[in-house]
Image (cartoon, rainbow, N blue to C red; front, side, top):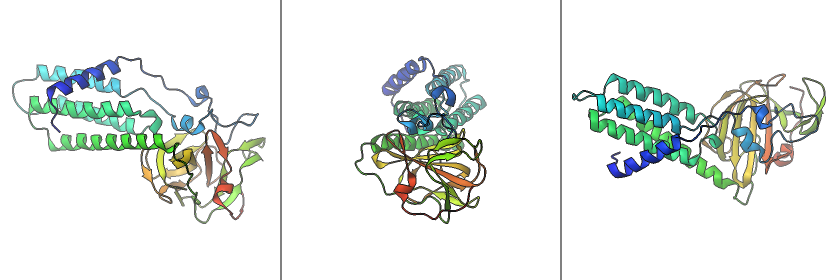
Amino acid sequence: MRVSATPLLTALAALALAGCAHERDTMTFAEAGILDADEPAEAPQPPAAEPAPERVAAEPAGPPIDGTLVRFSCEARVRRLGAEARRGFPLEALSAWEALSAEVDRYLARPLPSTPVAELSRAIVALEAELEWDRRRYGEAPEALSGTVDGLSRRLRARLEAVRATGSLAAAPAEPTLHWPVDGGAVSSPFGLRRHPIDHEWKMHWGLDVSARPGRVVGAAAAGWVVHAGWSRGYGLMVEVRHPGGLTTRYSHLARLTCSPGDPVETGQPLGLVGSTGNSTGPHLHFEVWREGRARDPLAMLGGASFGGGH
């Protein structure tokens, strides 16, 4: 993509100003007031303040990507000014692009709420603009570098589309019909007050446990967008999907993930495999349904089920 000089300078100036802002510190689950999926407080309450799904999905957060991009831009300008007259990308520039690619990869691994629209837009402009400036100084970029930057730009644009889409889902009037996330499983622990299987105290169980063989595929209960896919304390490996109508579903204790934050999913599309990660006594799926900061009984939304043994 070719970028004209005037819009480019304006975009980079805005990016530099954004990078001067104080970077956010990361926040722990305890600081955020988020409790483990299977370990709520003594007085039953949701594991997060309203809206609970956003708070859980936002962990772990990180600083804005702007600072990384501003540093890269400044260092790239110094390289271009000090480079010899000969054409060809210097090794130093290629190494810097490789490091930046790794940083953007880590950024895209964050949950959707940790990648705001403005940051994503600035990142796209910065990547494409810096590559254009390097081309003007060093000549045509190596094919591998061009492919890497093009791929990052596509992924950033896809994430931008996902963030915008999930932002409009709460306004959708109708909730989706939920389908069972695991075939052939049996409900081993229903929603509601129960004696905790680990500490044996009476506590609120905010979801539904479905016992199933380890490695069985866990599918999306309805179409939507993946807003979190990764480790969450207590939940283990967890996937969180945002659906129309402001509905959110969570799939916990997974052995492996088969999706990433920002992925659009259809009903039944694989999200991961049944496992026993986090606070778990054996292979099962811990399935939660949330709307407007309140946990809802998944069984009432899924229909009938066969009840089996414990997990």
